[in-house]
Length: 370
Image 1 (cartoon, helix red, strand yellow):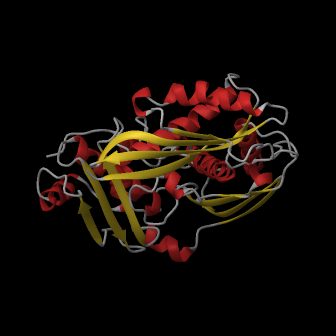
Image 2 (cartoon, rainbow, N blue to C red; image 1 turned 180 degrees about the vertical axis):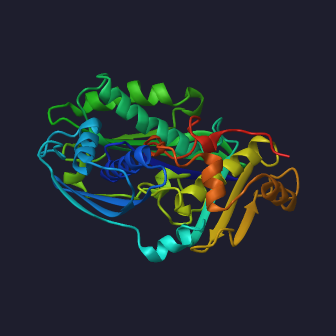
């Protein structure tokens, strides 16, 4: 019997890095609503009551970037500069240029917008074909936001993190060993009440009881108070939560971030396509676990390499799986964009609680593969 423990984390929409991701993805969606062929690479930086927007946008769209920023901060629930950030008074700096002509010359003819490696992964551990630890961490983080916004726990503030440690036996999920939740809150809340409410109204609602036992460890705001949060407590930056956004560290990562980038950037689009393919390899019964890697060169259409690893769980040879991939999917940047309809303004749906495992997203669709 082989036993090991694996841990993944998630964050709420109010985490400073996710605030930045959300602003960047909203700017992207707003450009695509007006001009489907917009080229966008936008970064957001959040610090003490200040937001900085920088990057490159080539578009016919007319954008009110300052309004987008303030509306997103308000939507998340930040309204107090003494605790986190205030959407009404925060300073906003904007420094946006157009895409480099050197990059554009390769993208214009259908080539990749950058070089790099991307990974896709799927596992039959959960019904959404995601690793168990990150799936549970996302659900806890999402529930943290729900109980705050619906008034079930109105004393919470937007910033928060979750973490789940899973015990595996012989490669199978056995139980949850540890749950860690840290959440921002109003100054006057009693810690015992907060801990009791989180266990009853979040953990026990989200986590199936069969995975919890008398040995499960619970850590709720282990340092005590968490009143100062958001960009006041810690600066935020677009693209810094790449492991939260993908597979919680359970699969490899090529290093490229997603948010704020249009689909000509294969960092984003190819990762989505590989997730789609890996998920369907598992869903079609060709493997119980599948990881794919692809590599691109800037300006070139066809990938330089495609790699398949099923970790010994395959029911047909990996060479046969590669043949299925080549027969069914166009991995050129334009082929991916067309297949997944990535010129549509869908990217704010991806920002929070993971870019994978959400049934409404096109790369999560299950198809028949032959």
